[in-house]
Length: 168
Image (cartoon, rainbow, N blue to C red):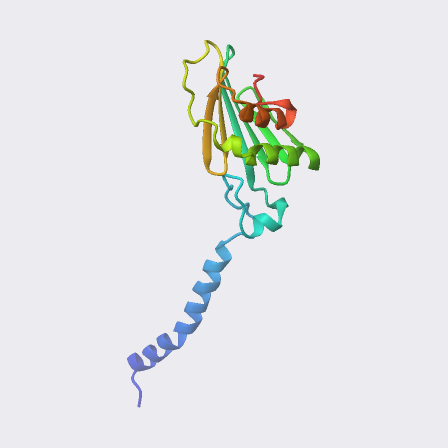
């Protein structure tokens, strides 16, 4: 005849598959399919981003700081052409670039001349000038009002609104 302890062990081992299955389902359920993916910080695309432009992956970020009013604005353009400008002084502004505008921005960012733009400014800053930080394809380029190589200016000209967001 089986003792109570032996019967208990049998039940405990019999429950192991159910417990393991519950843990696997529970852990898998923790991933929220509707949660946004972490932002991609560049123009290089792989996997779903390359085939699904609605993914919200970031194409380019442009931060503008400084100026007489002391702005701190961030423009984010996503792979699908949607964009957002955030500033300290107001509600975010949003919009969407046309296909032609987005193609122009991509061409400016992928231009070999842009890859040669120095990552840091050489000269002294302009008093009450702006500082521009452009992040594209895991590369950060910082420039001031004095340093605007033609390739960087081409990127600025292709941004939504015709340039980096400098208004407070």
